[in-house]
Length: 150
Image 1: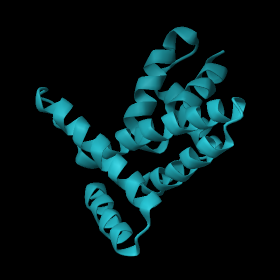
Image 2: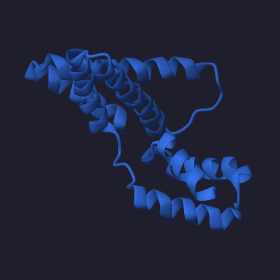
Image 3: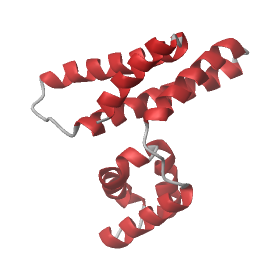
């Protein structure tokens, strides 16, 4: 399980005295714990790895946005710190689908659902997320779906 890998990485970072990696892994574990607490009140208990991957994807997206803002603002040292965290986060994410594979998956879903125009975008996106949610950056996939349906 991914949660066990994170805990093992935390222990290894402690042994290696790698403070930056340890801080990033602790941050990930804290976010996962926050998500667990949020889900206590809801009745839906999904796949544990899917929950952790969802948290990791959100964290990676936040880091990418922060890096862009820091670079635009001339704060290279802060961007570098975010990049280091992003490397650790991406280490635990599953391999992402290539753009060609994503386009092929979109075309397959379009054919199955009979989607033909922009009005069917929600249907295609829902199916794409259900099938490949852990392997895709949905914001990039959204642009590809939009281009495909236009």
